[in-house]
Length: 360
Image (tube, rainbow, N blue to C red; front, side, top):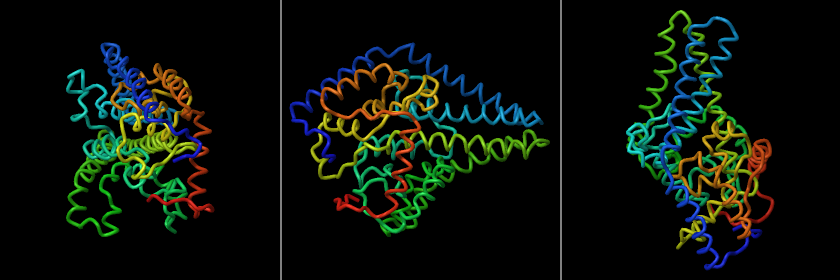
């Protein structure tokens, strides 16, 4: 526990829970056409941008159409992954009963299998947020980002691991639920590992065939240009999603927890953990859309099934509640948040200088 965070009494935790429940209810009771219109507008935006981008890449010959086409295709992939796929698969639109917006049926445009993602992200991460040893999203099992994590010589190279993860972020996320570390430490059999890997391998084959075989063949006279354009669009999407996710989870000020201190946790305690374990990023409305509104990571962790475009309107209420209970509301510019993330990556690559209980 962070010594700077006030110890709330059980009465205070219960009161905070009631206030945040009221904030949630005020939004969830008013869901309707406005919310449906937003997500359908985002779907049209992503599809239109993808069509325009693929057309400019596939049919053009000049550098300008290539650059604009790559930007348009990257924009489409970012909007589809962040504002549409991530939020739909959280169940934010299940209430519409629209099959296209059903969290259990949606499959997004990257190599991560939706079913695997719903398990390790929707369940594990959002249930055990920042509990070391339980939340495998904290550092993605390859990065040490807190003094409370045990140090190993492997972490000396984590600036390199971090760079590789950023460039291939969809693969890092896609392979997360395979739990390869269990194979390496002997707690998973080879047969179980192969079984767990099958959905990921299927999705990889599907995505690679689409972007690097089908679309290049459709414009065979321009195949090298199309292949390169798709590769660059995917790379841009990976770097962007990596940066947004890391800025929402790992900047200075975000706290970690042990399994012991989260035993017998109430919903109010869970709310507190979500607040102090998350961080927001300041920006424009366009920035918030391109981030999938994960620029409001605090609000997302509090209310993951709330349509994300509503986070901006409740953020002032959440911030006021945090202030009244003495809880830090971690928000800053993208540059500041990401700068502190990179500092953590380099600092925690080395053994801690001070004695700190190691949780995991």
